[in-house]
Image 1 (spheres, rainbow, N blue to C red):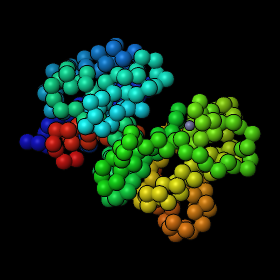
Image 2 (cartoon, helix red, strand yellow):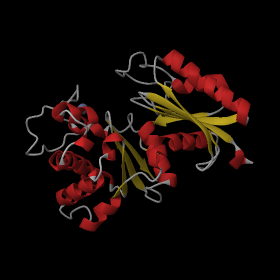
Image 3 (tube, helix red, strand yellow):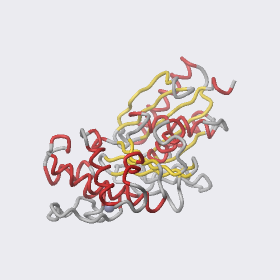
Image 4 (spheres, protein in one colour):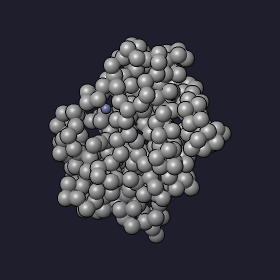
Amino acid sequence: MVADWLYGCIEAGGTKFVCAVASTTSDIRERVSIPTRDPASTLAQVVDYFRRMEGEHGAIAGFGVASFGPAVVNPASPGWGRILSTPKPGWSGIDTRGVIAEAFGVPVGFDTDVNSAVLAEAAWGAAKSASSAAYITVGTGIGAGIAIDGKAVHGMRHPEMGHIFPRRHPADLAFAGSCPFHGDCLEGLTSGPAIERRWAKPLSQLGGEEQDIIAFYLGQLAVTLIATLSTEAIVFGGGVLHTQGLLDKIKTAATLLNKSYCCDDGEIGMIIRAPGLGQNSGLLGALLLAKLARGSTP
Ligand code: ZN
């Protein structure tokens, strides 16, 4: 029976690979976190783990890889699944999807971690029933996944909304920004490293003034999404969002910036949301990719 098929889920991150076997969102049987080192030894460990899981739980019918980017996400491309140019040593050009497909001989779905997260949130989580949804992670960088009618937006490559250019906060004009490409793009102003570089502490240990500055920028991102994609649900996750009260500050900033234009004031607070799947958005996104690759419905 289709519902009993077992899937391999891989959330491939720059610092760790979270791997799990699951049949449904409520049946995650085993999970392991493998530190991301060089590609050969990391992927060998991933393959070993799933071989062991097959021994314990039975055959795996399909895999999903929710990967850090940039990566080739178009299934029609010959390079589908490859990591593009990345500062992560050794990982440029690596094909995690291909390694898994070759090792196990079953269908393997692939997308970015944030595209996978938005698909999972749209299928099962905080963005359920939203025809236009976004998942934003604010951590070591800014990642943005966008789903329209349950399909991840790929386009030319995949969305890179961390690299848009926000209006500067009047109390934050001295900082040049930390993005090696653009300086004061959104990622260069609001990522965890950008926050630590200008204030020497994580946002959770800083005061309301610094948090208001970060919320001002992330509020602009929210209004930009609503204005361009008529987004019905914007899910904010990632380490920086663990800062108590930040999500509410983003709602307030976005409401002030929007000036009741794209939607009513009260609606912004409904559109901006915490993840419905907690820390599991990416991993369950991998489960969804595996199901789709196997031809199952999520
Ligand atoms: Zn940038």
